[in-house]
Length: 187
Image (tube, rainbow, N blue to C red; front, side):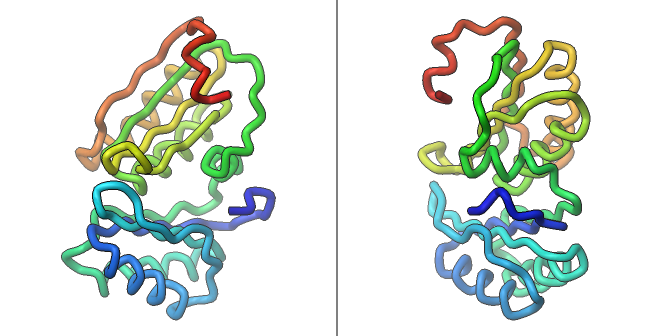
C-alpha cells in the first residue's frame, strides 16, 4: 500500500469467506472508479478488501459489495477524509519518535478498528504507531498510539467508543511512561 498518495476516502469490507472475499473485491472494483489498496485473507478464514477514491465512488462500491455479500459480511466502513497517519500505520511507515505513553485499542473487527484509529488520530494530538490487521491475531485487530497521557487517553476513549458502539471492542488501555521493552515489537 502506498501511504504517500492522498486518498479522499477509503472503504473496507470484511467477510467470513475467502471465496466471498474474491467476489466482493471484484464487485467493488467493477461498481465504481476506485483504487484497490489491499485485498487479502486474514486469520480465522476471513477476508478483507480496502479501496480508496472519491467519497461517492467508495460509498457506492461498498454499498454494492455489502448488498451482494449479504450473509457473509462481518463489518464494513467508509471513511471520508481519512487521517494520513492511519494509512502510514497500516503500511508500517510511521517514524518512531519519542514514546511518552502507550495507548492500545483492540477490536474483533478490522473495519471497526480502522474507523477507531481514524477517530483517535483526529480527536487528539497523538501519533499512530501501528495498526495490525488480523494476521496472527485470531482475526482481531489493534492500533497503538503515543503522545502525552491526556491526549492518548482522549484518543483511546474516542476510538474505543467507535468500536464499542458495534459491540466489537475487545479492550483498551493507556500506559503512562511505558517501559522501553514494551516497544520491542514495534521497533
